[in-house]
Image (cartoon, rainbow, N blue to C red; front, side):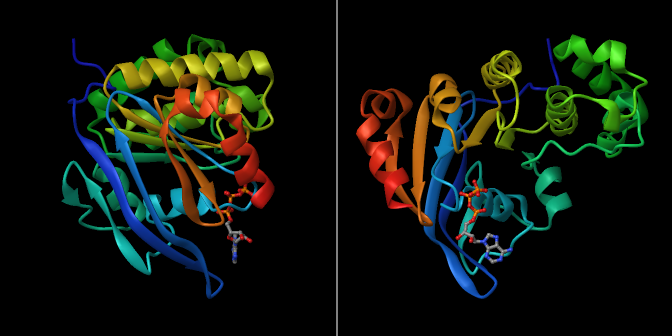
Length: 245
Ligand SMILES: Nc1ncnc2c1ncn2[C@@H]1O[C@H](COP(=O)(O)OP(=O)(O)OP(=O)(O)O)[C@@H](O)[C@H]1O
């Protein structure tokens, strides 16, 4: 069966030596990450380490001063946000922002405008199947949702575009543990369907529990790269990175 999250296997999204400046100041000093399809990759690091900057550079929101993003072996052709999305990379920015005056259903349809109408409707129906708890809220304006429900809408909005890669900035921030557990399960299910997921988190427990590979960012540089299991087994790596911030 083909699903929204259907995707090939064995390919990667590669961030190669990204250098990014903000306010004229270098913030990323050559960040390289590989995000494989079919698994979750964690990007963790202290406040200000450069995680959101990395995601915004990936999304095409911030320009690169050097480096390259490659998608399945080919450089991303255009780096404007819509073009990045059209090439199969979806980003959920920090802060679970939804269109407050639009209903949940219209929020999802608005994210599916690039698809022909029947496919858009099918993709939205699949999102309600993925998040059945949104079904009773179908006609509720976005602004009346809880934080967890908003985060579900944001993830669903990213998935209706049928991405091959999905980056989520701060999946768990500000959400109740039960909601985080639920979202972590969805993220794992999405990865199992073949999507390459990048989970960006300041608090590491959830990200390292669901990830296969992990990166620690420290002051705009990759301070650790390896398996999430290795990082779980050696919390001192995290401690020194977080203390160095
Ligand atoms: N708009 C901006 N202009 C200039 N510098 C910025 C701007 N936004 C962030 N920075 C700087 O970029 C660096 C990285 O910030 P970034 O937000 O990427 O970190 P982060 O790891 O995502 O942390 P947080 O958890 O706070 O979001 C910080 O030193 C920050 O001061």
